[in-house]
Image 1 (tube, rainbow, N blue to C red):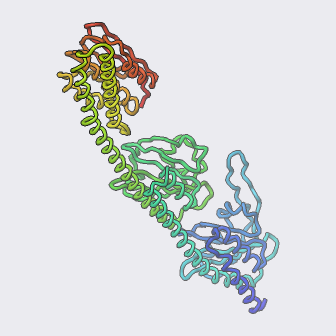
Image 2: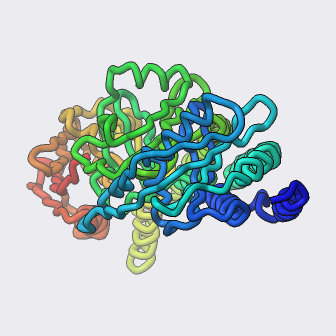
Length: 544
């Protein structure tokens, strides 16, 4: 083949490079086309093109002349490993003649048997793809055993191709990295804006799935640190591993944990061999390369983001680690700001509820109470139907005051799951002391501190109304509030030593019973004239 013929063929290849090396194409697709071009250029049976990572291992590989599904196991073929070693040890093209070697079996998945495809090579011709002093990858040509030697002109063609492709591929990879970094930055900025704009319902899920997509990961796990435990909040890409969801584990005292607490990521080449406590009891056979990235809050580690790939997939590069870590750092700040914003909104809501409760108590209730007292002063001076109508009005005022006071209690406690029934009853007892003229006796079981939320709100409202009835009607000198939680049941009672329940009006008691029934419970009334009254509620308690 003449020099001009070589130049024409190389020139033809160079014209195709812009299309081959487009930045929007996946590296594997680019390598397959480079292999096909080299195979066509040098007229061989097979061709292989591979990129090398920082440790000079194969980070991506494409072939021509073999089924594409075999690419995932070519990286372990002894012939290609020999070619890589030889070409990195010397300059220019390298020819190798090897004994026939079968292609290794691919990894079996599930019930599918492992493939074993007998593919052997005759003579190999290899060259490095160089960009300046840096080796980007290699190209290897091969014929079938017995098909003869690779033509001598292929040495020159492959050498020219290696020089031309090296710089071109390096530039294409740099451009791809820049564009990829830009995608990460845009995703982080967009995520921050959406979090602060309250546009995302599940921030942790959004952070993990965007990171999984950008990093080209197959699965993701997000866990938050809660005291001395780690709680798995989201799992993506591992649909069959239900055991991971909502898992809570104790924080391990390990070197890896201390590394994360310092703000450094963990890099695993094969998570199936090194899976920690989060994956305990889970089948990790298919798990491969992984990154564990710390989520750092204002003062300490708040959680971890795991990005992983399945077996036979390429490891994460240093560039991917840097980009994922930067994204996680910005996401952590955004999550921290979002959490602070939610806390501020809750505080504003609590302040507004307190203001409304204060206004209701200081103005509305006091005016109604004064009106009721005025009517009480004249009711005995009236007769017949007029007296009955005024009495009914007084009763309506009492009912209104009771409902407003219950509303005030709800406003003060609503939305705060940290307020327990013990706290509420203690506050009510303190408030009632001034009205009763003596201090009510509280006998509260420690288990009462596990009762919060709507049940606590309703039971506290029952105590408040019972004390209100004692103040208005019982003429008592002692009140005992007793509460226990035992075997999944709350028993709460308010007992006084007053005149007992003598009124035929039971609408107030009906309301107290209804509150118990709303939680699957009951209310019992025990009273004797002149011997006081005891109201008892029994309600099932769901364990915290």
